[in-house]
Each structure stands twice: as C-alpha cells, then as structure tokens.
Length: 283
Image 1: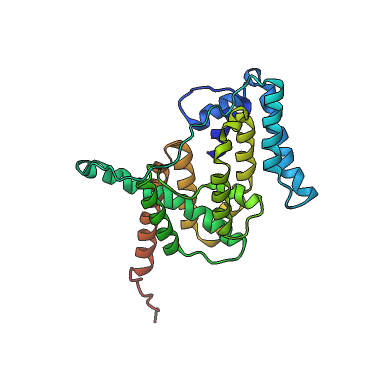
Image 2: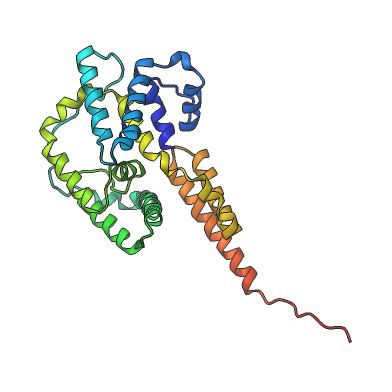
C-alpha cells in the first residue's frame, strides 16, 4: 500500500480510478503518461540509497539524493511536481476540546488507536525478530499514549509508528531509540531552512519511501506460517486480502483481521476442549 501510494509521485502523474492500488496499476500500464524526468530523479535516489551502501554502510544515500535532487531542480528549473511552500510556524499549546462531541468521537478514536498500535506493533515486532530481541507490548502502549496526549495539546495529528519512517531510519543505520531523539533535534535545528526544500521533486521523496519499505515485504515469512499453524496462515492471508481490497481504508482491514483472529481462536479452542468419544475395544 505504501509503495502504491508513492507511484503517482515517482512517475509524476495521477489517475483517479477509485482506489489506491487500482490507480497505481493504471499508472504503471500507461508509460505514455509518465514524466521521464521524474523517473530519472527517482532512479537516481534508488541508486544512491542502495548503491551507496555498497561503498560504505554509513554512506548517506538519502541525504545525497535530496541534495542532488534539490540542486538539479533549482539550477535547471525542473517543471514537474515539487514539494512547494512549507508552512512555517512553531506549535502553540492549548486544550480546546468540545466535550459535547465526545460520543461521536469515541468510535473513531478507538479505530485510530487500534490502527496506530497495529502498525507500530507490526514494525516493532518485525525489527525485533530480525535483531533477535524482545518486544514489550505494554511499553509500546504507554509510549503511544503519552505521545498522543502531547499531540492532543499541541494541535498535531494522531501519533504512531510509521513503516516508511522506521524502515528509512533503520536503512540509515539506526541502532537504538536515541536515533529518534537525534532526528527530532536535527529537524528542530533545520526548521528555519525549510523554505529551501520547496524545489525538491516529489519523485525523489517517493523513491526514498519506496526504497525504505521494500525490505518490509516478507512473502516468505507469511507463507512460512503454514508450517506453524494453518489458523495463523488463514488470519494472515485474510487480513492481507482485506487490507488490500479496502485500501486506503486500512482500519477496515485491521478490524477484519481482528475479527478473523477472534473467530479462528474460538473455533480452535472449541476443537481442543470438546470431549472426544472414547474408543471401545471389541472383545
């Protein structure tokens, strides 16, 4: 889904056929509508991201792609889609909440919390398994809760882990949670320079996101569930199909997956708890 969402940026074209995956498919099969300059920027970013790591594991491929893309766009007057003007301004703290809207916001809040936790949990467990480390769901819950409380009083969007940002962070060589704090400090320090990014081609950003999430596609891991538990495989495939078919409404896929998990768990538990008829030996 993340890759499909970036296809319009990479090819600098847009088609509205009613769905995220459908739009990406129609763009890919119509090369006549592609912007080849945007494709060139995207290929440059991919080469720097993956080729640079062959030179040295700490090669700043993403930074190099942004600098080269920005410089080329500014010098040669790139006429494709660019980031554009970024609104500047610091946060203001406040608590302006209409308590009368609590009832109507309750269900959306639960859905947002479930989707936010599911995405963060998935990426955290994926990286924890890759590094052979443990993952604490309770700490994940607490950290998301505190972060969203801070977002609520500062006028921010709901906060949660991101597949693309986490993958990009890992690709850059991050080894600990300090990477997030350092990234935040650098962003604040670079805040006055945000107008300089206005000429950055969106194709470069799209390619960076795609390159970061490619390694998250784990078809082999999903298929390996069949040797562990057919019930787990059913839940996994069902959630995958539901998420892709309801895109971009990812919350529907998550809710369907949760429902599948509950149903399969109850059926499996009933199968193992029901008394089995005793065999009678013939005399």
